[in-house]
Image 1 (spheres, helix red, strand yellow):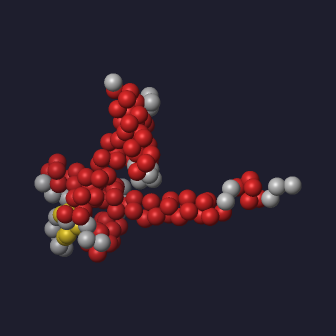
Image 2: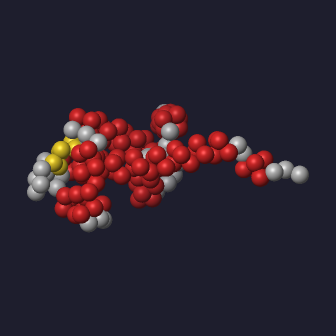
Image 3: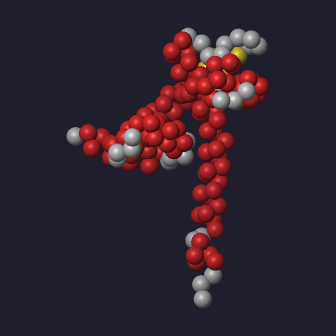
Length: 146
């Protein structure tokens, strides 16, 4: 008779997987914010709390709390009632996130996912894909283009 461990696999492996997912979720909000801040700055020269709240579908209070956290983490700078700016670390994170997003989106489109669905799915997948998987997605997509 097999035990539950046989059916579920090694507990340590499963715990590591869930731990990684929890860590990914913690980083996801910061990544979404810095990527959107970079997009707003690049498109219009500034990122304002009201713009972030509108595009993220959250309240200004939520944006202010998150921006405060991002300031403590050294990713943004901001003054009350002023625009939000990325630090060098924040800009680097935004560039990294854009690259991941582009690779995942390209892969989904290469396997036939429609543009709207691919855009939505890429937004979630990009935060949870490992570097090794990301490289494989990029190789696959590049090979499909040849």
